Length: 416
Image (tube, rainbow, N blue to C red; front, side):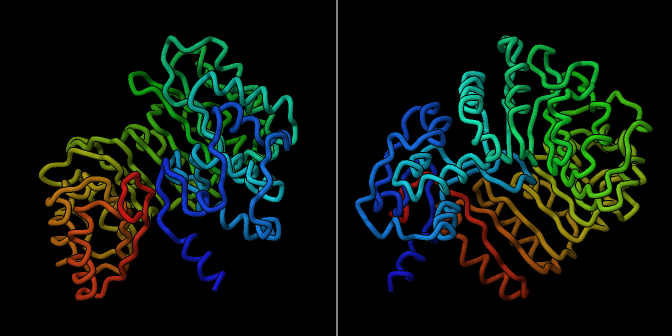
């Protein structure tokens, strides 16, 4: 009976910015300032509160890790394995001594630094408490830099990266100004980044108004990469300098020019089969690419894309005819659905917008599609979703389509 009750609490919807039922029941203290909790609670047992429920001390670490896996979190980048736990849940590490270790590991596993000030505090914590350095596996450094950012920014970032020992996912800025970019304008990788040669996921965030170089030495250094996100990165490096990556599975592009430039290199990457376009505007005069018609990609992502009226350009049309799985954002789906492939193993649709045109597009697509699975990413309590949920259930049942949901945390008051 007790196990069943705990299971219901763990599976209950989690709301961003609000304490969960478990947090309320176990009197998890509210987190203090960002620096004192996020970059301080893992250092010492000072400030821990004793649990009012003795049974808490008897929970095995494995069960605690399952509990902490249900804390509110967000994923800073498409394709990253780890989510960043919401600041409202950082206080779990202060509940009791038995929670301290598992909670510290959970919160430090993925760190997103939002400002130069917090970067300085993080660096101070890593220098003062070296045992924290092995906990951070995913690191996302500031993505919103401006020319007014402090010149010491790059140095702080590089020191943080140099402190860490176990990184396998990194998001960093490529040149905006030489004072804040981790990668200087000459396009060479700094030694601090080369230290992490076993990275599996790398997000390079470029500046859209100018050509940001793909750093030379990247493919020679990060030979274990499975995921490469070239967000806003245009290229000024010879493709002949890029070595094939034997394990690369997924590439994200925001420029058709990038795909064109990397075509021969991507064709030589033997495991590559997923391509995502993000914030890209398609044009009819875009050159058809051999990589699009080669059948190399079986999964395509179209995230916040536009253009392509009344039909997709030839290069993209070739790719659409050969993929088996499609991941697409709401606005892109509503805009493009008449031209999307009708024979797919999986369609993943992120319903981040509401409106009758979205539901009409889903219904229109399902009515003449041969689809194995429909995966909807939704905010569970959104009224427009609740209004049309049964309609989608019924249509999928009639079309013999497997329907699955992936629920995002939301801030609404429903379900309380």
